Image (cartoon, rainbow, N blue to C red; front, side, top):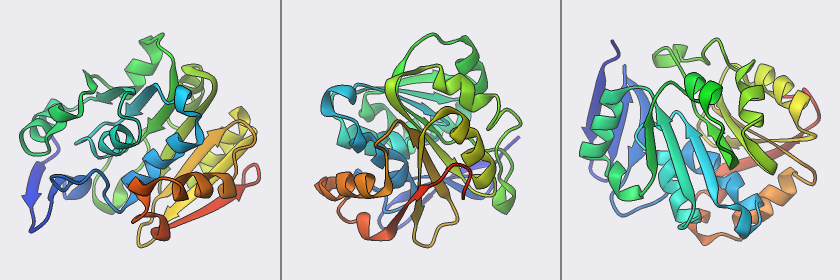
Length: 232
């Protein structure tokens, strides 16, 4: 059974699972200055009327949900998390319940298999393992990405947090989307992949982030690149 702990620092709180940083929360601050900001940033590519329904697979302590809530205060956000102890810790120490999201305690794979709900943006932040050996579960990227795509509204975006499987996930995204953008955050090994319709591009995403003051502090840490098909 994974070990779950909350560490309190001078400024913020860290939720760790088997020693791996899973969520970060600084009271009164919506952003994290890290990969969770990059996971939420693609929401800004959607027209404001399309920022209504967001699904987060692998809710954890709610770091991505907090960014999304700040960017889209009226959005319906659904967060799926399979570990009850993670949710308990997030509610007790990271103010998860103050975000006003629908929390579903379930495995992400099961939710995608059973749900018939549709979303404008789906963020996949699912990992298994521990320490530097975290990786995607067996159902990702295939058949998981395909199942998620079927839950997207027309013109919707799919975002995946990857580390070692970046190239594999990019190839799978290329099967479903005409455009893919990669975001890298300074000092992090993560590769955030965004799949969507044209005219999705790195310059367009960067411009969208630059226009949003909430992410102004994180923008200089982000590197955007348009991927061509299966490149990584």
